[in-house]
Amino acid sequence: MARRLVALFAVGLIAAGAAAAAKDRAWQTGVVRDMQVTKPKFVLGPTSAAGAAGPAPLPSTTVNRTYVIETDELRLELKETTTTEAPALDVGIGDSVTFAIEKNTVYIKVANGKEHALRLAKKIVKSGS
Image 1 (cartoon, helix red, strand yellow):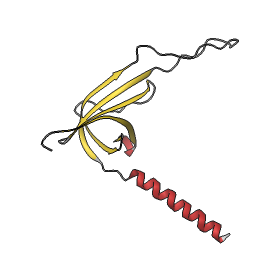
Image 2: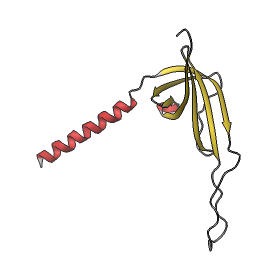
Image 3: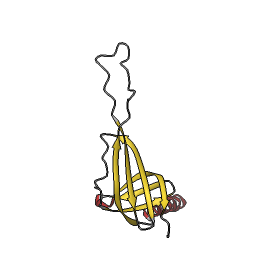
């Protein structure tokens, strides 16, 4: 019984350490320089199944959101493909944002310290940096 408790405690510590490491990011600040939202030209959705009662529900509309963030050294182009119902970043052009880059993902800090993950599409290092 004691060994089981020690093992459970060890697993708990490892899990807590992994969760803490995920939040320990190299945060930077930048300015939003551009934002665009585009919709695909057509959306293929579900069709009504034979014998189904009533029409099939309409599919959620997909949107592609692009954000451009600049610092003194970098220009980042971030992409997000999601639905119209999913919340967008609550930022405007010229707003300052806090972000962290991890491989091909950029995390933006939003209200209440939550993080919004976006795909890093392009990273340009400014010359002279």
